[in-house]
Amino acid sequence: MSEILDNYLFDAFANASENTFIYVCDMNTGLSRWSKQAVKFWGLEDEYIEDASAVWIEHIHPDDRKLYTDDIAAVFEGRSEQHNCQYRAKDRYGEYVWVECRGSVIKDADGKPTVFAGMMTRLDNQSKYDELTHLLTGTELLRKSFDDSGSLMLIGADGLRNINSRHGLRYGNSILKYLADAIVDNSPGMEVYRFRGDEFAVYGKNVSVQEMSKIYNKVNRICGDAESAEGLISFSASAGIVQVMPKDNAADMISKAELSLLYAKEKYKTGMSIYSEEIEQKQIRKNTVSETLLRSIKNGCKGFYLVYQPILSNTGDTVVGCESLLRWNAPNDAIGNCYPDEFIPILEKNGGIIEVGNFVMREAIKQASIWQKKYKQFSVSFNVSYFQLEESQFVPSIIKTIDEYGVNPEYITVELTESVLNVDTNLVKKSFEMLKSKGVKIALDDFGTGNSSFWTLHNIDIDIVKLDQSFIRGLGNSSTDIDYAIVESVGLMCNRIGYKTVAEGVETDDIWRMISKFEFTGLQGYLFSRPVEIGEFEKILTKYSMEK
Ligand code: C2E
Ligand code: MG
Ligand code: MG
Image 1 (cartoon, rainbow, N blue to C red):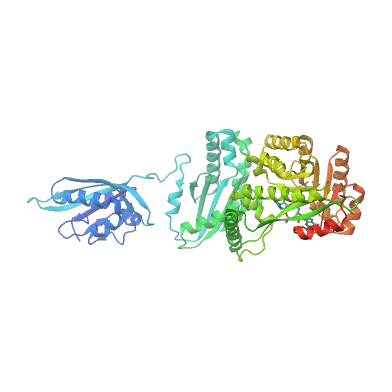
Image 2: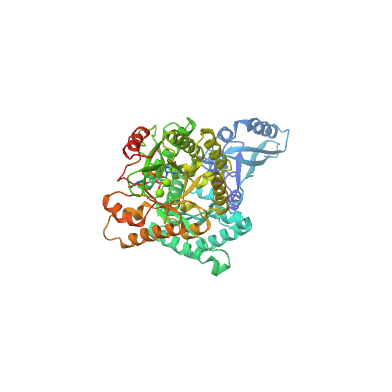
């Protein structure tokens, strides 16, 4: 026991301070004592430290050590009364935190220094609470150690960025507050954090993932009621949930919950998913594919190439054109086969679609110039993602490339999937007008899968409707009267309006026979040919005697 170190005053001050750390040193013995918060925060071994200056100097940022030692020396050598300096010190996670350290030396009756005591105050991130929602911050969650089992949920408002840009930040903040209240009200006895931006975290001790998912459902319902309850716009929330075991690391659990949240958003647009090894594997593959795609792009789109699938006249005996479809040979064996349905969404997300899209456009037009020399009325189409239209240079570069290769624009078709047409219709309209004024044809791809089919037909000037292959392929099953009705009416309707139509997914003779009376302008499907490389395609061209 040391009277200097073990007294009620130290205990009282140490307990009262949250973001301030107290220390006192008995200069006769060299032993010092640090408040419990300091021990935890800085990751010290014990409250009592033998040679504190040697231990502490290791925590101080190398660039700040001289500043610190000079200041301390001045106090200890009697040149200064007060130790007072600001420096960076390493916390228990190895991260540097700015602190202000103040201390003073107390001398005995003979003038001999006996006590050195003081406190350290964190200068950054002092508040544990988020200003907007008054919830604990994400930093606090990261510092958490799990001592029990339970579950952790990350939950976020969908499309908050859109809400912010449309209605302003203040409105976005009201949405966040509304969501925060909904979470707090429905998770009694649990810890709720504003993890970051639009994401909140809920930790429930002894709460199962199933119970946590019920909380998500309730919160999501409340978000959907935002309009009637508060006059805000209704919105949805997505969540990722992970089971937590004692001693699990907070950062690991957060990243698992985040991964599950991302999975839910990507797979279902909105919704909830519970962490599993399988989700993690899928997410890991996605990351590997994404990084490898970007590497291929950096290497001049190495590994990307086009295959061509013939489009036949409605009689099925002449190839009238083709669709260019992208393929990618991943330079990484671990990836194996990777098709557009997998890699296009990844390219759209990581931004690679812009460069790859340019590559596709150039390759397709270049190939069209070769085939058009032989077959004057041969159409080549290529797919375009909405994101490419957002690049102001994209449409002008299509026109430039057409001129560069001397291709007849009447026989170039741009295919755009319908599901993206409800993003910024003005942008789409403007892009299409520019292309159409050049003579380029516009096809609406995968018709029937989006949620604005008829609206699109009514409002956007297009040339060709490509009915989604799922409807056509559905005709192969005897039980699909609905598919039959859809195919029939789309065929009739387009004929009536004067749009050309292409039936995709014609896989069998039976299907072909069934659709023949609907007068589709073009036929495309495995029955005639799968997408093939140039050499193979030229054999098909010869077989299906294209008029020269
Ligand atoms: P899509 O544009 O609707 O292309 C038709 C897809 O259906 C192709 O798949 C084609 O191989 C497949 N298909 C054609 N006939 C049949 C059939 O009879 N049965 C079956 N089961 N499938 C058939 P692919 O090449 O895997 O492409 C999938 C999607 O990826 C394309 O659908 C398109 O949306 C996208 N995509 C492909 N290439 C590009 C590209 O260069 N740029 C962009 N943005 N998207 C592309
Ligand atoms: Mg297409
Ligand atoms: Mg399609």
